[in-house]
Length: 434
Ligand SMILES: Cc1cc2nc3c(=O)[nH]c(=O)nc-3n(C[C@H](O)[C@H](O)[C@H](O)COP(=O)(O)OP(=O)(O)OC[C@H]3O[C@@H](n4cnc5c(N)ncnc54)[C@H](O)[C@@H]3O)c2cc1C
Image (tube, rainbow, N blue to C red; front, side, top):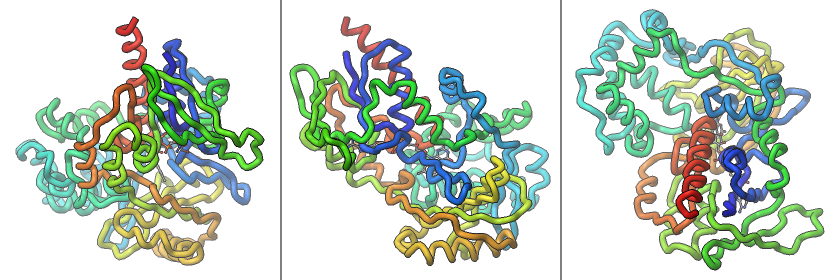
């Protein structure tokens, strides 16, 4: 049985890796000339920049890949999680331990008491918004000063527009398991345990998909777009076309597969599935948050991962990643603009975006900065807003699977975990068919 994987981002490549480990046949087809999808790392003026994820957590599935690929020597680890929120005109440290919770100036004593009362609140309702849930459970102040900026920052989004059922399904499961949300947080804090360490690689996060691609290069076709998926006897035919201008093989070629895994954005998946299911077009309704990334170079001595900006601070900046401090990256800071809060801003020209990023960085960090790069992502983060209701109308054709950041969580560790889980399901399904 052969699995056709569309896309060599981290999901497609991690899936390939685990299928290989399970001795399964597969082929990966990637439109771009390089692997990684939204994970992009590279140098500008000698500085290492990230145009996608700035870091990832070394969870067990990530660790397994690093070990399998022999990449331990390339891993660089950030220190303890130290994140700030810009609130009331000042950078204030977000608490990640009981001691920090006691000390934080993001919450008054009354605000801290409200947080501790969470176990007495009603359970999450899947139809309330993330903002309503956090406010109801942890109080106004904790939502406004802490959880709103940190949670919204992860997705470049506004929790007021994200229903719990789409944005916080994991949190609901956690609540069902422990009876409330505070208990697991306290348990982790008391055991001194923090999340898995934040890591990158000497040459950036893209090294991980590159190493996966190298390890499985015989079955990964870069510079090749899947243009059509057709039914064939008992399986599917993938029509492909070279996307490389210099490629003499500009004619299309086809490959027969038994099952197909799509790791592409909702719009591409809708297009490819249109001949196979009438419901394909519902995928085009899913919203993404457009983003602009401005990379700055500055001379600062702040230690930590970076900051998120409280929504009512009057800044366009959503947050800033301190690559310089996290991974010793030559004075590099990455400013995120746009998102669900201000999508139109992403359409401004590079000069305007650079100016905004520099000037707000100067206001917050009190440091001059040079602009190294300005870039945009039309389909930056999945919005997980009410447009996700459309998925209820989607019917997946037989033997086609969606493994993507719009059907499950978007973080790199979640993408790898989902890919591994799907490889297990596919391997088991062979056993059943035999
Ligand atoms: C700016 C940004 C910052 C982020 N920060 C973090 C972070 O700090 N930590 C974290 O854990 N996660 C972060 N994420 C999330 C994470 O990086 C992504 O969710 C994840 O990398 C998505 O991987 P994927 O393989 O599912 O999809 P993609 O990376 O989108 O891969 C899909 C692939 O399909 C290919 N493709 C498209 N059409 C076709 C076609 N017709 N034929 C063949 N191939 C096709 C594309 O070229 C692409 O390579 C961030 C994401 C972004 C955008």
